[in-house]
Image 1 (spheres, helix red, strand yellow):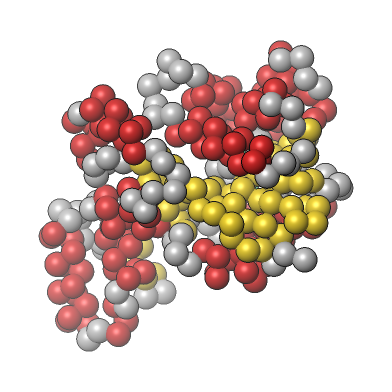
Image 2 (cartoon, rainbow, N blue to C red):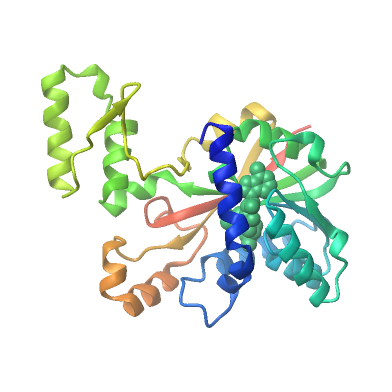
Length: 291
Ligand SMILES: C[S@@+](CC[C@H](N)C(=O)[O-])C[C@H]1O[C@@H](n2cnc3c(N)ncnc32)[C@H](O)[C@@H]1O
């Protein structure tokens, strides 16, 4: 996303989602328990690293925060959606925690963030919406103690090589093959080849030499390059990449065989399996602040 109005769209979207957001963590929820799986391994790693204080950025309605408080961590949080903060405060109060543990803040705007330091900072479900990831990461760095850790969730760009759907078209034609190096007629042939193989409509629009899709706007990140491209320049080393939300089969089978799909996918949930590079739609980067 690259403009202020995109940011407002994201904020409005989450304002509208706030009322029901905590339900995605409930066991009876039909959705795949991806957020719960993510929260479980993040808590495990915080414990293993003897973290005591945590800042949860984009805290939503505070389900992760409440779990962390219960586990004994000292936690604060913020979110840029006013409605999320309102709903989050209610959830904290209901659970007997202090509502002023959270407030409103924008991760890309340093002056709106808490002015203190933490052992670890989380951004779960936040980075795919940002227009300036480097700025956000550098804001996080400034609020970390020496040797502090970040846990940042990304959508997995390589998953598109497994899904064989319209996202794959975008992946192969915009990020793997250099269409601009081809004569126009060969480029057209290659575009047709992928559209036909993937049985997706041929993209009809190109902007700045890139194929564009009106409905594909989320930011994906390649786990093979994320350290060099984003973390190293801001002064972090990547400790681990934790994959989650595995898909046992390409997503098209999910509607056809929902319970088989879910059961087999749950069995694959191992955050350090090489298959995660292809079959997991998301991952969390655990990185340490360099001196
Ligand atoms: C997918 S939700 C995840 C909520 C929570 N972290 C969780 O794991 O349950 C993402 C949250 O990030 C917030 N968010 C998105 N961009 C943000 C930004 N620039 N600064 C602060 N919060 C942001 C949204 O309002 C939303 O509540």
